[in-house]
Amino acid sequence: MPRLLALTQGDPAGVGPELALAAWRQREERGIPPFAYLGDIAMLSRLAAQLGLPVPLRSVTWGEAEACFTAALPVIELDNRSPAQSGQPDPANAAGVIEAIERGVDAVETGRATALVTNPIAKSVLYAAGFQHPGHTEFLAELAGRGREVTPRPVMMIWSEDLAVIPVTIHIPLGAVSGHLTTELIVETGRIAAADLKRRFGVARPRLALCGLNPHAGEGGALGKEDGTIVAPAVEQLRALGIEASGPYPADTLFHARARANYDVALGMYHDQALIPIKTIAFDEGVNVTLGLPFIRTSPDHGTAFDIAGKGMARPDSLCAALRLAARMAAAERGETA
Picture 1 (cartoon, rainbow, N blue to C red):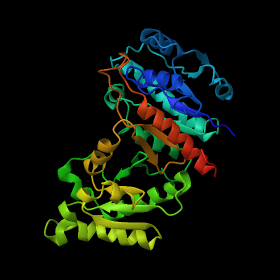
Picture 2: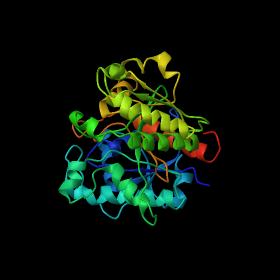
Picture 3: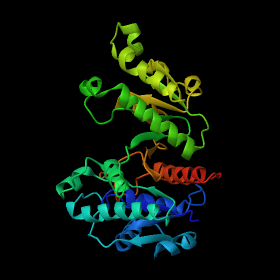
Picture 4: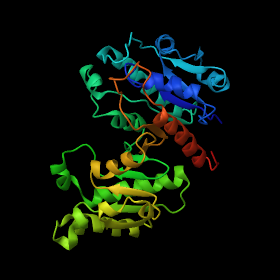
């Protein structure tokens, strides 16, 4: 069975290509598992020369990639190529960005790769080229739903060795959170999280800690009713499903070291409630993990960083962590130790 990971180029004008080069160069010291890069080998070669990175590249098929990884960075070449310039987002790159994602999904679904790791994309660039999906994750869910009766419902988890968090509501204005937050949404998110923690993280009995929406988790209703009417019933329903859920807890006391020892993942009710703690604790090492898909997908927890692309300033820490975690999740799913 292959242990190979599929790594997409992301937006080739962003930092993804140089992060792939850096990750391959540091493969031994950082314990990077074998991966194949889906992208343009000519562009990657120019970038390596520009940055002074002595990385041998090899155009390969999926069957050849894993064996050559120790000697060269294996590249699965795309049909859609463009003269991408670092730091210069261009809708002309969109076709290659999309092709890399589609071919990466196909590789994991057909067993040629064991997990998918995606470099960052720029939605604005894709939208300018006619991309119709809300974002990267939604596109992956649609691809995963092909041939299935139900499209998978993806859940975003940001993971690090010290903390894992899930925002129940994500990219919506703060003032709209209480209107979008429902007991059903919290329960579905928690159920998906618990299932993947068991299957792909090897956690026999996942512990979920739920943040309260309001200060002091509502202070018994004095600071808002949602924690009693929406969040607390979700905790009870999750428990009824056999999931070890607790809360709602005041969010300001849930993320110190002693508190973190009591749960495997914290569910925040809105974006910043979940992401501020982990980006404070593990800014460079956080990994974006998509739960709920029929295949493993991880990604660096940062964007395209067009402002520093091609300057040799980008740190590969988050991509390296994403590659290692993808391999670890795949091993857990196989019942092995990574």
